[in-house]
Amino acid sequence: MAKIKLIFEELYRSFWNSWFKDILLMLMFSISLVMAVIMCSYYFDLGEGKPDMADYEDSTWYEIMAEMNEERGFTDNFTTVNGCMNMLEYYEDLAESKEHPIICINQNGMHMKETDAKELFSEDNYMAFVSEENNKTIQIYDKDTGDTDLYLQIKALSLNLGMYRNLGLKTAEGNDFNEQNLTLKKADDNVPIILGNSYKGLVQVGQVFDVMFTDEGIYTCRVEGILEKGAQIPEFELPGVDKNLLDSYIIFPDGVKVTDVPEDTKDIEKFAMHNYAALTYGGASVKVKDKDELNVLSDEFRKKAEEYGLPQLRIFGVSMGLSLLHRESAASIRIMLILSIVLMSFTLYGLFVTFYDKIQSNSRVYGIYLMNGASVLLILIPFLLEIALILLPAICTSQFIFSKDNIGSSVEFDIILRTAYILVGLIFAFGAGVITFLMKGVDTERLVRHKY
Image (tube, rainbow, N blue to C red; front, top):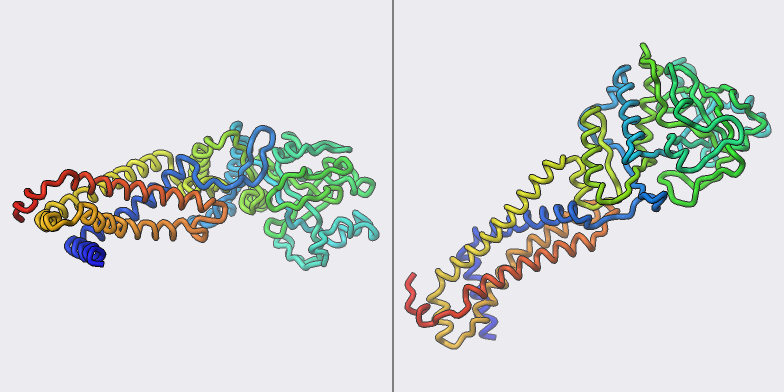
């Protein structure tokens, strides 16, 4: 009991005599540990989550999404012709990247006037093409005409050319989507669409009709082709899309190009909004052959966003470090790495100096302990407890910052926290080694003769 009392009395005396230094070390270790774990995660893919799609065609597809919490009012750009054309070029640049093309697919809210649906698909058949979840008519205001009409939500998918080809879709009649028919000369030209096989016999290739997306406006569409019977989405999971046969679906294209710059914003604005929606609502993915490319890809997305002045794409299912630092340039991250190493080195040096001073300033007391039969271990234990006390806030800070609520549900938290604990263990081992070295081979007579 006397030994235990001595240990805690020494711990209290040692901590209180240098409380400011110890608290400063607590703060420095907390910051250092968090930065070290983030840097480890960035460079060693710690806490990597699963990509949103399975491996496909010798590559992995990672879900991406445009940031929606930008400080700039970027959607204000869509009120000008140049701003809308800029959005189309941004999308084209991303979708046609040779190394990392993006693909998009969304199950969206395409609407058609109830009267048009009945006329096109007949009174007996039109309900087969109406969304099963939203099969009631709704009133929609047309901002262009000022009219309010009854609309039905039609089963539809929006996808870009890359996704169309990756899904292996083929038409039984007419043409598939291709670069030529997805390039319009004028913004008010008819948009090509492809229908499921159940439309065969009801609608003809080349037929024209209107559809509406409530946030975008009305599109006049031309039937480009009709899919083969039984066309479906393959058996890997696509974000935001149910696994359905496509026989009763309308396929609407993302990434439509417009070659002639229009004079009026009205006709081009809807295409800009549609491409923005394709990148924003969870249906876009990027092709990555090797996960080592993810750091480069994140930097590439940041540069493109800055170039076009539009939202940056965030990659999901990646390491925590890449997720947190996706807006930073490679140069900035290297600077952060250097600063983290410097901070950790300086903190370890501070630990060494602090405990060296403690031993030197209390050497006479320790000499008396040793002369009265105390062991070196009995003197070491309070120091080890003090180091553990200094490191405790760093552990608590890591557990809070790297919690599920703070870093998202896709991260493997046990890997992140285990890394933090390993780093704390290494620091403690360093501190224990320093104390042992300083106390090793102590000369008790010299300690007794030592003066303050």
